[in-house]
Length: 575
Image (tube, rainbow, N blue to C red; front, side, top):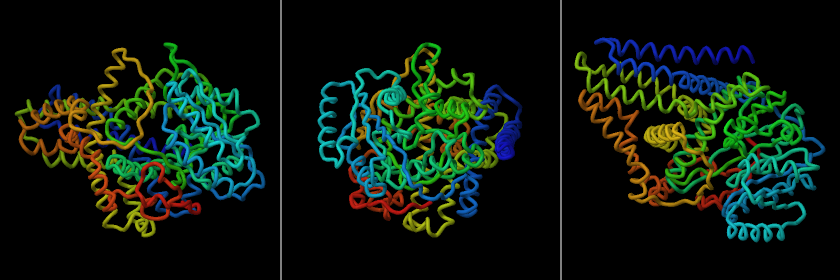
């Protein structure tokens, strides 16, 4: 692993130094001004993350196109014989103020499939509630009682509700392990919107059986087929990027990988012993539990493995931009808390890097906006030299190409495989979907960067972070709501483009891919929540994932997916 990690560091350094040197050459003509110096410093601060994106994407792409056998060996995935015995597995589902009509049907399908694939009493279901509203709790309890009464073995279904949400989801899980998990060797962790096939669950269980040093093993988790435009476009691009990113990352991180907190199998004994989270210095509980749990388990000598396989594991994505931004800000608040834990005793270097990477995912956004502000100031005040259009566009293309390398190479990997391309409906449909999604991503990322920067400022000024229940229902967003949410982005965008306009139309054109979303945020929010656009994208099969076009591994009809998904049945394991 040392040589692999050294290669990644080398790629990151080459990208960071190379891009920063190119920007330095671009800015030098006409002399250095304070605005140019700020541009260079902010850009250099974001460059290491850009280099990491290119490294993971490029390595993952090469593994994926190299060939199945070599690719499997590179990321330590292997086939193994079916073991005679399945250890007892507790299926732990965490819920809080959820609509049980959406939570329970996928669990019924999973139990039914497990009964067919692995007869016996190895699996038991535990629904772990942190619901605080009494009326919601009463409805929840009645729904689970009816669900239990319909099961072939009622005593394998359990329901427990805490009266206080102490420690958030991590506290919910640890309370279960302390009081209800005796007799179980493994735990399958699921969120309220998780769906898994029996094949996927058994694959994880067998992986745990084949390697007793593993504490956590998980799949990639893909988005469910969606009707609304926002989750449809988002999950289409996320899937392409995560496949190459996770494959490349698994190559150099090995069994010191990340943990995403759900759709994973956990070995109970080491998790219960080592993954009790410390309080923050201010006495608060940690919001984002997953990465620190992985880090302390790795530090204790246990493996955390990611199988970069898409089959059989999925979740719902936010139904509209307001829910997406709220989820991002929850993750941001939780990830930034890791700064207090970087010096936690017992962590390995890779564990500390996992925490640092989680911080960097959000900490670079203020530098991105600072770069834009400085670039706009330079454009408006520098009258000593014309705007370097050709060089600026070339550098920006290289920058965005590296930053979005996992996604772009994920698209290329599909395009190079006739079989995978057929699963997406052919080259024309796939290329059109990828182009539309990439434009959507550029607009959304500018909106998100401003929201995240604002949230970081509020946290720095003493705002208290929380973890509120999530809306998972598809809905429309009207113009007043979108305006209330995104007017700061719009105002900021107007000021930015007014400054760029001083340097002429070429400077405005250069800024569009970087900042255009600031101006387009409000209409983008309204448009991508409009049911008519979602229905049109669905009818045209734009941004359709293979599970929507062909036979998918999971029936997602209960989530309000495309009507064709109502008849979908699990299929055999595939890579």
